[in-house]
Image: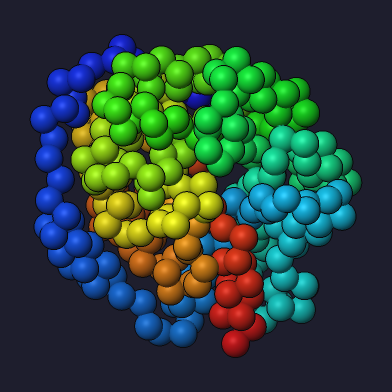
Length: 309
C-alpha cells in the first residue's frame, strides 16, 4: 500500500498565513456557480459519481452486527439490477457502482470484514475505522495508538483519526505534529490515515489552515473536516480553506493529499456543490476515491431518490 511520507515540521509554511472569511465566502459562491448542474440526466450522472466517492458510515452507540451487515449490503449493491438496466451502463461500469468505503467503529470492523468477504467485495470496498478516541480525541496518546493498531489487526485499511483540538487552540503545533506523526507510524503501510480536524471546534479559519498543514506534514493521506458530531461540520468555505492548504502543500512537496468533507452533506445538490468546488480548484483528477471522499450516512438515500426519479 502506498501511503504519504511525513516531512519535517516547519512553522514558516503556515504561521504567517491569514484567512479573510468574507473573501473565502465570495470565492466559494463564484466557483460553485461556474459549474451549476440542472439538467436531470447530468444530475443523475453526478449523483452516481457522488455515490462512488462516499464512505458509507454508521457511528452510532447502538451499532450492531446486523446494521453493519445492512450497511455493507447497501454499500456493495446500492441499486437492484432492474434500476441499473434503466441507466444503460455497460458491465464494467455496473461493477463499479458501489461506495468508496464503509466506515465503522473499530469493534465493528470484523463484522464489516466478514460481510464484505461474503459478498466478494473485500478487495473493492475498503473498511475505514474511526480511532484515537473518536470523537473528542481527549484520551492518552498510548490508548489512541493502541486503538489504531487494534483496528488494523481487525481488518481496517483506512484509519480516520481525530486530532487533539486543544493543542491547536493553544497553538501547540509541534506537539500536534508529533502526535499525528506517531499515528502515521502506527498505521505504517497497512492503512491510509485520514486526519479529522474537527473544524467546528478550531475557533478560526486560520487554525483550520494551520491544522491542515500540520496534518499533511505529519503524513496524513487525507484531511477531513469533521467527526459529524460537532455543532458545525462540513461547510464549503471551510472546504475552500482546506483546499488552499492542499494546493500550497502540493506546490511545496509535489504530494497530492485527499480531502474528505464529513457531516452535513446529505443531498445530491450539496454533493454536486462540493464536487464542483474540487473541480474548479484542485482539478478533475482529484475527483477520484483516492483523493476525495464524502463521509456520510444519509447521502446515499438522496442519491437513490435522484436515480429513481
